[in-house]
Image 1 (tube, one colour):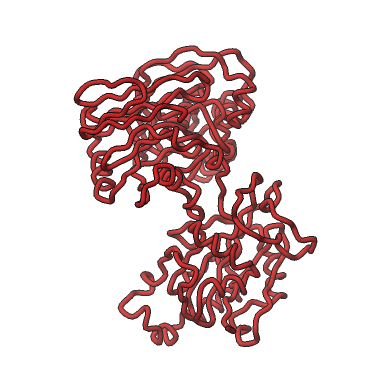
Image 2: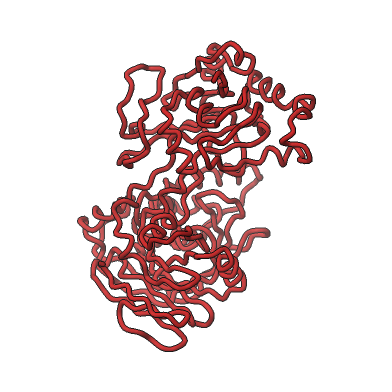
Length: 510
């Protein structure tokens, strides 16, 4: 078939430029090689951006420079080509620099064929991408960002002319905004019509830790409506924008041999381990969300801090911007979200040995060497993203291995007043001066941890402890202990779960 998908713009992750060889019929929608080179030379740095499944950021290849090699695949020696692709599995050990391609379809046909021709990818690799949930479509091409080139804007205008859209039966009855909403492509043979927008995450974020886990041994409980999992650090509860395959929900479903996929009811960070509740039905997923809203779910955490913390309730206020790092203030700021946690106890424990840190890929974040750390039991009163990590760092007691917040805490200790929202913050003469200080403070933070940090969701309960579950020993203790579960009918022995009138046995290490 002569159908093609046209790259709206393309920029190689290594800083080079790439154009596609397409039939002449498609040239009206394809940006020229010269235009791409000019774009790369003039604007490339400003286009290093992130895409998400519910927002449009750029009609270009997403590019981030990385010190690692692309996939663990045979790389081409050509300076203007991508690596040679084979399959997504087995999972590579090396990280790959993000590569996100944005396409517009010029002729109708199967989505697999369009992507293979436009991006010169083998069919099996594209099928893997679709299975991973790494391919999205929208009926109408989204609005380009302000930094788009004239050529990119021309392409957008051409495929979204009112006269063109009126001829498309698939968008009748929809507003343009509704037609620009993105959805996952779920089948390789899914038909895409001319004008359809495609976003392909060619290098999905990978989770090699998933293949190292004995998932059956991480199951705490199986009830009629839910499963409780002792989530390992370095894994995602429900997956990412470009990878729903390598997730706790997927691997737990397979470990239990369930026919219906488990569903996420709440989240904990990838670098956090511990109790996670997965719903077996949509109905219970909704029920559990309601319990969270009504504050009927209680969560306790164990945190391994670098400095001692006082017991009692700690309050901060978090900036209402949904991006990391999360900035918090000791003082009330209008519009910021209150964060509260209660430290129930804090005890001195040995600092994890280098061997244990290596085993769990705990990062050395520059904290001075010391013999002891401090294990804190925390009752989480509000459930903000990164709340414990950000609050402990603001108290100059960052969690061990937290490569995002520990560098900022170290900078704050060495330079009091650097944090514009901290204890030693100062008055600013203008908003511009304050904005500069905020940008500088954000720059003190590091990257998200790769595998584990000193944080475990050690206990979860709801309905006044009618359902009560505990995780295993945290990674820093390195001791095998047995779990106990509590229900309204009392405690059961180690390795047993009692819920809903049914006892399920899950001995650790099976």
